Structure formats: C-alpha cells, structure tokens
Image (tube, rainbow, N blue to C red; front, top):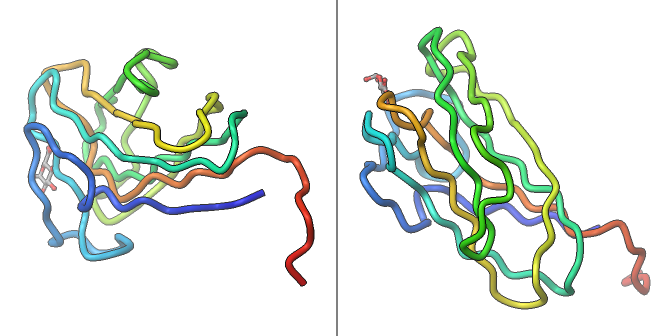
Length: 138
Ligand code: GCU
C-alpha cells in the first residue's frame, strides 16, 4: 500500500487561514478554519489506481465542542457530519479515518465544516491506497 501525505497549508482553502502558532503540526503549519458553516479545505489527491483508500485527517480541537465536517470525494459527500471532537488542547493532534473509493489519477477530497463553529485546526490528509500488493521495488 502506498501512503502519501498532503499538507492542509498547501491545499485550496475556502474561509480559513494558514497558521503555525500551535505546536505539533507537520509541514509548515495548519489550517485554522473560519468559525463558520461551509468553511473548507480541498486537497488534490493523485491515486495510482481506481480503488479503495483510507483517508486520515490529522486535526486539533482545543474546545470541548465537536466541530463536525462533511467529507466529499470528487464532489460527492462520502461521509456526513464526521466528528472532530475536542482533543484537549490546540497542541494535541489526533487523526480520524474513513474509507473511500478514489479514481486512478486526479481526485479531490474536501472537508467542509457543517456547524457555526467551523472546522477544527487541520494539519494534513494522509491517503493510504488499497491493499493490493504490487511488484516489489527491492
Ligand atoms: C483559537 C485558536 C485557533 C482556533 C480557534 C477556533 O483562536 O488559537 O487556533 O482555530 O480558537 O476556535 O477555531
């Protein structure tokens, strides 16, 4: 299986800002979603083949209130109201995962806040493609 990380700060951000004031992120920062319904991050994801993939979103939520988001792949919502619960601190990062089908080649994965609190702070999307064993590169 191939694992690829896609940083949120390099994605297409709608109603959010890149920040780096809470430690523990990977890359150069994270996205602070605006506290509003509809704020989103959209990643461009390349898959080697059509098939199932595990999508993991690394996030922090320093509040005690869930910041749910809808997850869309290629414009179709594949998971509604995925929970991004409080992690205890803005510097405490956790991952939540779901499985979705990707197309060979270019895909979009979008995480859109569904409540007035907006999204959590989002560090990155990690994509693990399929379980099919390919030819060894050794
Ligand atoms: C604080 C925190 C931000 C966070 C925001 C929020 O301002 O410093 O990183 O995004 O709360 O509630 O969304």
